[in-house]
Length: 273
Image (cartoon, rainbow, N blue to C red; front, side, top):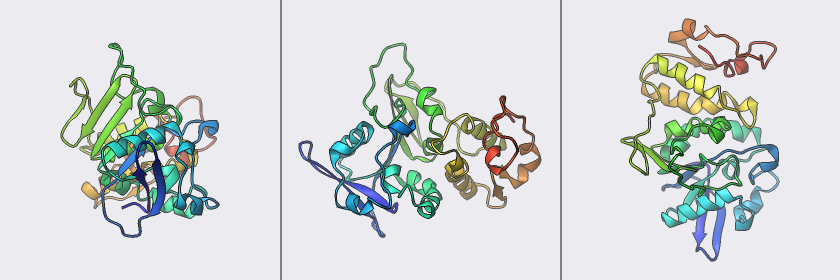
């Protein structure tokens, strides 16, 4: 279980959301993946100064729309716990954030379901935004998918993943990947061959982060999954694997240049291999 979870209780007329410390608890939970958005749209978050208050109760009316919709969905599925990053990690505690970032692969892969607000640009737009016009795609492509690099790994680590998009719902699990009309969508595995790592990096570097300094942390979960499954004999450092080092240092700058010099954090901003 994660370090903290939101306990969903009460009913539709009197919902109750409380932050709980797991402390070795066992059970099942769901996780929410969403875009934080610009500074003026940032979601409600726990900080050192308010965590005690949230451990008592989180006023439902203070939750942004996406959080309220996720709470409603979790309640309808009769699973009492939900993980949301801004409410389950102390955002201004650097040591805790670093520690929790290293657990992301576990948090998302162990969730019984990951709920992706793939059609919303920030936490105020909600999950249930589908208008289902015939011309719209069900697949999560542009729009918010470019805006949240931290959502990049959740989609590949989740055992079960449901996308909420303007065109409708799309579902992915270990066996199938399709939309509500029965059309198949395409996902490639985390690591089948080395070229997939380059594809993952190219896609990842096209995304923006709420905090650019989080760039290496935000892909660490996929690195952990790849290392556990195939690469015990290879080492990883700052976006590169030891067995493919020569190929991975063959890069060209994306115009216009975004940084004055090459460093471990700018490696993750390169977009062509």
